[in-house]
Length: 243
Image 1 (cartoon, rainbow, N blue to C red):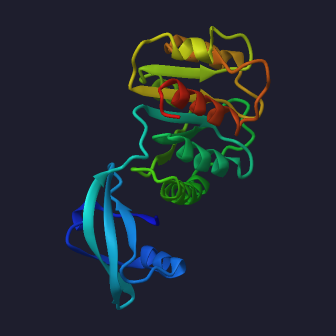
Image 2: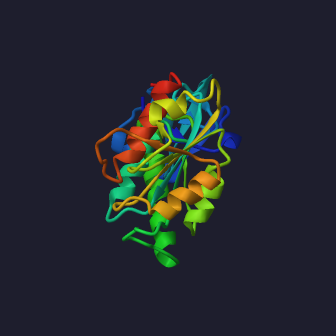
């Protein structure tokens, strides 16, 4: 069923659909009487019936309200060092599909790409649109936030606040991913921190450990920077019965 996101303040009775959403309805060739879903971005779905074209937009009627079924029971934020090229777009799209609540990019010592200033603003605008489209496609109940932090230290300080703070490293680690996820019986928040193409510097691993993060590995194979966060996120979802 087609899916759109709107503010909950307009989701009652007869609603007006304009702008990009109206254009999307045209592209989908929805006809009066057909149903679609509008989500308020906070976990509630509104099942709507298309009524008729109204000026440049459409009118629709809310016929049922239900809880979104696409949200996992665990809140997981993905922190990943800036990758090269368009790999960030892949990370965002697939992280949203896997159930991430938020995706955060940050600079690391070995990062090749280091966008800043206007470049970051432009990238964030596109990245947030990618998150929204992925949320629609995967029937999420929220649009996961995409953000940028200005330093490795800021990323680790924020990530370490999660009840299950996971820091992934391809060198010597304290835990396997299975051991780390099993080290606590219950947790509601998880952070996943992964590195750039060249991996993390040992000094960065030391800082992460000092912040209380669990230094973990994902097996003997070396994963690409766009693969690692998705592998970790899938493991989190599987371990918490969300996959």
